[in-house]
Length: 328
Image 1: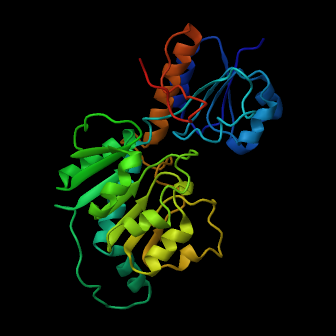
Image 2: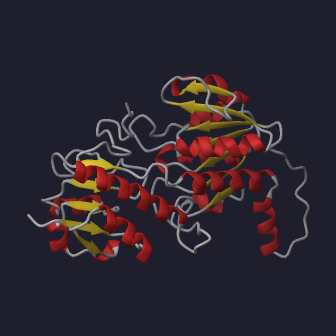
């Protein structure tokens, strides 16, 4: 069998060299995600990077898939990948960019910059009234993985009290004042001035923030979703904004992407929308390379070495949950 590694990622020459050094003797085929040759897909034993889930019906020789995303929900469904495929994700590559997005979104909404931008576009000199501060605010982070922990550090440095929500109980990690499991969130939602969702897409998190949970938030809460779109009931979010129960919200993700042009979400003045860019490849390093792609390349190179040597791999995905397996 041919030793083929297919890489549908826009890597720089130096990033390609890092990958190739991890698998000497293997043939690397680089391609744009939208222009992968079906024959290359069929021949590949290893794929590094995301493709549409339906594309893997042709990947009959696939043994190992390294995702370039942290989310793996689309790939763990029965029948998507060939039986026995090892699946790893890119957890750890998106911590800083997504955390910075959420932090910036909270500050923007607190200072009403979104409203002032709208006023500027209308050439209107209008003062929007009182603003708020992160200092001494209570911020709840739902989804306290690597991104959530990175965000907690930023929020704590700004003087916020940080409440974390995660799947399993443990002692509160650094920069988190109080930690609860997901089933306990209803008891602490009314305390939060800001609620930030970094939840993944799973059966358990679908519509996690629904009409009931928005109603439990205190009047004037700020809400940010930088996780997955289907964790939020969009009609409930819109109702909470229109009734002014929520003061404002920012979402980088929606249930249907791209968000349809006729969606009423577009017209809500207290909702700030970005097109799923928080965790993209846009954050640039001092070397003018993508910060995230550098991290993805590092994870992929480590896992290539481990896969070929039969050693322990990073970010192994549990097909039954869609989350990374716990490391021993």
